[in-house]
Length: 374
Image 1: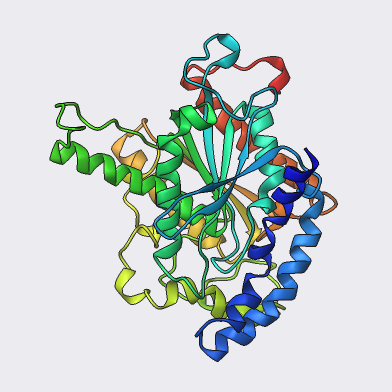
Image 2: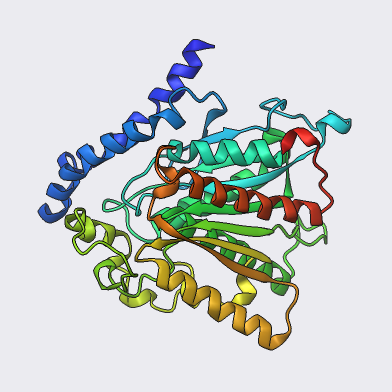
């Protein structure tokens, strides 16, 4: 048991030290390379700062999932009392398929590790009986749009294809979510599933020539924390909310934060897969919740998006979809992943609201909880 546990922890090191690797062993321009070298100590410091939530956490296992760009390291959280693998033939009340939640970590498209969401993923799995699969992806500046989006598309497809036999989960009770860049990728993946479903319905795609239509699989809900929705403008041009610091100590990283979308900005202004703010409401999951930090340059675009979709749904009298925002006034970008001595009351209030959002959705699909999951 000790060796697999140790290997699982050590397997994140390549991601932690990727800034240095990309700075020294790539053909990136100099203005990106020196910033990556300055990003490296920040990466290490953040990993150490967040280590209480993952270093001794045995709630997850590591699985490498294939994609078009190679295998990606992902974390699997099984509900308490569940085995890591649930076979088809196992029947009985205690072995029914679990809800499935796919989580994607943040990092501004230039970093981040799946472990930074360990506390949240463990909490969500404990409280909702869901299998939580936490994904990772290629990052900028070495990999730009649509690299991360393609990775997540491939990973989501693989997870859905193997939901029952590998995870013991029900792909028809799947929700998607993420923080920061991960939220953008998660909602984009949900839109991708919608488009795939519409394509197969329109073209009448059959399975193996059998005359049967391809099964429709969709995200039942989206749950996002501090999600960037608008890459049509540069990070430094985004409107700053009240109480935002007048001097940003990480301002030197802003060009890196723009590296993923910057080169593709002009030709993707109307692309909802990157600029989710222009997405058609019909492409969104039926239930959408944004947890929004009050001291964040992403505040404006998230509230603008929610208000626009809410107004459209109200005008049409559409009761089949719901979108809402929970604003945490004291919150700032990334605060949910920080140690418990920082805004813990606000964090747990946000966590519990997000859990209730998922539990209520599961309830509408007939999932029943026992008292232990509360």
